[in-house]
Image 1 (tube, rainbow, N blue to C red):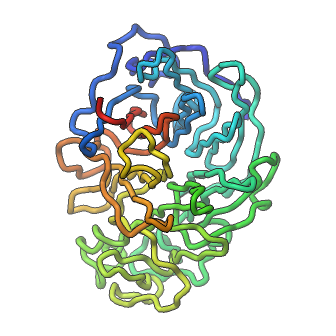
Image 2: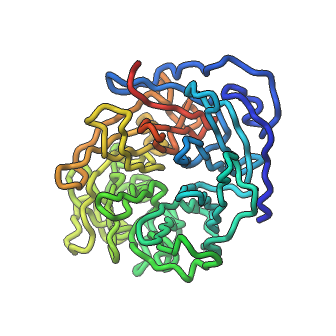
Image 3: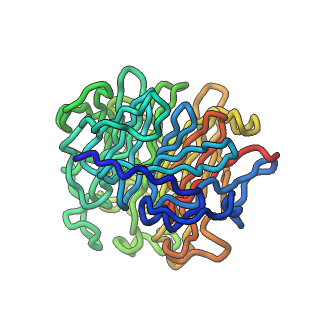
Length: 426
């Protein structure tokens, strides 16, 4: 990694051509981007576009001074830095740097961590008011498995120098032949040796290898939505559930079953936890953990092993949880404070039913600090006014979440990299 910095262009918040082309200067557009028509938020709040698009965005992080850093999946650079220089709420200054691409990004003090599919690096952010790092990045962890499926290495920074990294399982259900009808599952599943879980590394160390990490939890198919919660003192994640129950096992499941099964599971990650994949799944209709058909299940057989916990929250199937944020939310009404937000990227495999998700949900914290089972849709309508039959029809797809220093919510989408802010009305 060379750490080359594609910086030096200050594109306006609405200069979409400049944004997508990667720091090419264009004429200034309107001072404020248009309102996001059709997107709804609860009464007393407004949602507005504060940058018209940075490209194929993934996760984002916010520095204490309000600067926003967006991780990109593709493009001329891998990180976009945004600043609201005149205090009008719109991020009109934009600079780009980093020559890798990926998903994970997080900030601790003046250190900016970014991940690709195979490594984690960190930059030191400038202390002199600059927006982008001046130095080369340091390798924090390298040598992650090179996966064809579920390769995104989302990350979270926790207490006691912890860096948590998601390593997804490169499979649907760990079959002898992946995604083939009627093929049984491998038992034990060899993919769990190097995937399907959360690994912990030292955030302060450099030059670590994947083998140096400690596996914290297993049985998690893919946790792109991963975050640290200081109040419970633990990482949490929302897992992508498995697919194709009806296509692979038509004797047990029909298209409606496939559209509604399995739930997307939100879990508190505890050391040594086993959350059930690929041997089980959570049936939100029954409120029960079921034996997967690859391991002898038939859609009616419950898992009685007692090894796998129930989720704190069971979200609808195939909504694709891609970001989790524990927020103070001081800039929102009291009922949204100190809870969790989940960004759902939207489904692709609920046909012939319409696709679903494409929203941001809110999970309130219970009096004892825990979460679940209740939740609500917080921001909706991103996909557009017409039913979505395939993801490419969606206007916006929520992808990343962050909180501003004022306690307002930022949402970035993956289609154009549009940046939204939710704040109090007025």
